Amino acid sequence: MSDITPDEVADLKGLNCPMPVLKTKKALDKIEGGKILQVDLTDAGSKSDLPAMIKRTGNELLEMTEADGVYTFFIKKKLA
Image 1 (cartoon, one colour):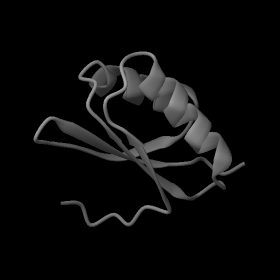
Image 2 (image 1 turned 90 degrees about the vertical axis):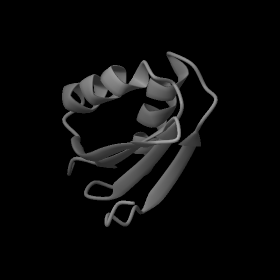
Image 3 (image 1 turned 45 degrees about the vertical axis):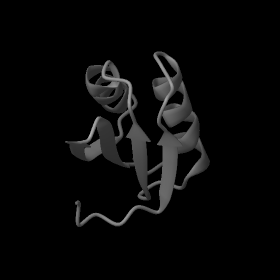
Image 4 (image 1 turned 180 degrees about the vertical axis):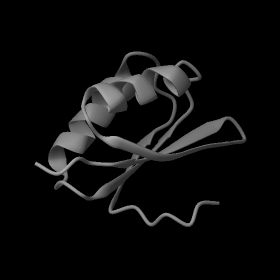
């Protein structure tokens, strides 16, 4: 369990590529810069796809954990 407290949570469990990446980007677009988004998903391909998108968009991956087939990402949105 992470010590990070998210400002928003996106439950994307059960979705397959490319939906987790697209919906994560959409969720990031809705929050203010500096806020933290928690994303929960089950698509194993997202383990590499999501960090690549986060880096490409200039946001920060704070932490990624895996438990019982659920991947949890904590993403800090870049400041505008």
